[in-house]
Image 1 (cartoon, chains in turn green, orange):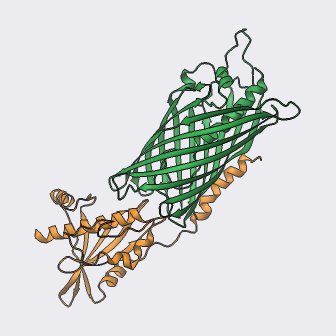
Image 2 (cartoon, rainbow over the protein chains, first blue to last red; image 1 turned 180 degrees about the vertical axis):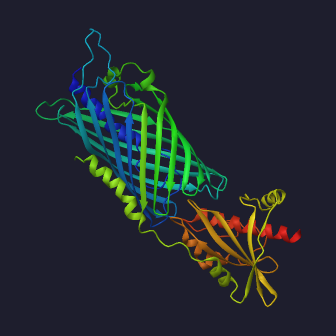
Image 3 (cartoon, rainbow over the protein chains, first blue to last red; image 1 turned 120 degrees about the horizontal axis):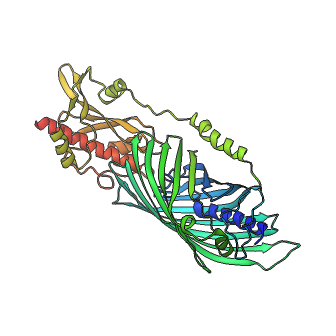
Length: 307
Length: 182
């Protein structure tokens, strides 16, 4: 397995994780993944910028940061539309990326140092609130996001395009005059992607279908005006035509500041159980599953303003 | 397309700072202003504030079916030439980020005469200042339903504020009734 092959797959993996791990939305949320059911009031708009720093690889120096920007607008009493862009920055230096020696006993290949930063996807979404947490027994909303992602790796001479659609169910229950907020979100990301080699080494397209499930739970309490503190957990598991990948359970604290004009949410996650801890060496994972990214920590930050 | 980390970082840092400087004014009445707005003919506003006991808080909470966060009741008697015109209650309820401060004018027999929003700091929802929405409370008494989507209309985009103000008015009316009985 060549270093360029590994690098290509690493980049595609990060690229895909951008889609999997980031919901492009702009409306204020207390959590990283567990969206609230509220939509923006009709005629109101917000923009948000988000980033996620992925870490915890097994060896070498590795940094991956995904970023996104989104615009959201309320178009009805209970309906919001979102449009967003996303990309990533990745830096790797002398990184064997957790690989084990192969069957012949040869040492794990070292990926040459490289750095990439790319805009890699566009996304649109629509959210409809069905029940309000303020006037009904609990809040409930449905959301659908559609994604297009592209990726070109000059060194490996490949291009990839991926299409995705992600239906999401959002539940919210408030207590103590709406200062204690419990949320639950279930989403399934259906994706179809193809990789093709570019000239001069034209090869057959490699296409695949997959679906990733990502349920999440969050609880946050407003401990002071403008400030909420809480905890969030989410689980990621993906099924492909070649079988399912190991799931990962993440958990961590979150803090949120919300003002009249802007808000910010910071979350830190640690992998409590899952793939990078218990999985076999990653070379096999990448050979069979190009979109796996087994990071062990995630720091997520989003800042938004209302226009 | 390639972006630089520097551009991204600077953009994320600058956006809220730039926009927060354009925050809108949100204090609509001072205490003195709201007292005279609600009872323009009054010459004296006598401080009659009181605190509920633990048992009284429980009673109010049970009767009004709302949470009683604070025992303190900020109350003024509106008086003109020794004649009691009514009461002004200054109250706070939770907004999404901060407290909403409002005033309720009550008739001498504890019916709502008028409410005014004194301070509103939320991003959305200041439509509760709309006179037509506030007028729905006029004449309400402690025994009335006082619930959004029942006898109080909701304002889309301001639901949390509508619900909390409505619950606040119900709590105040129940508290005043209890104070009167005791």
